[in-house]
Image (tube, rainbow, N blue to C red):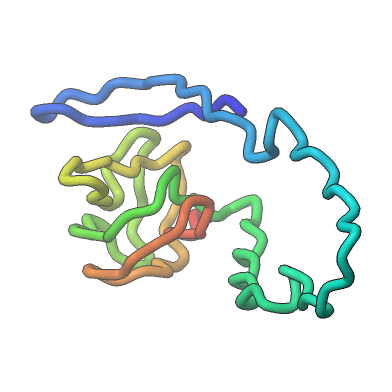
Length: 130
């Protein structure tokens, strides 16, 4: 999977393209071998695994999604504020690096869905822009 990210180093923004490995294993494990000795029944791994985390809510056309998982360290806009394309909306921190989230187009901030200190997941809606 290829992702495009915008990172900032010493106040200078860079657009980067990152290739992430597929999550599926490249080689399937070998099939289990039959045992000549009878054994006690074993619970299936699916039954013992903890429940999966709920999927993130779908992001709408006007939502600005988080490009990565991280913590919100600054919010530079307010609801109702007009913004221009490229304007700094908020800052995420992940692995001691700051990522500036900018407006993808001109618009008005309808809603801010995070707060300073919030931990966000990749793809989670951060701001709604009208």
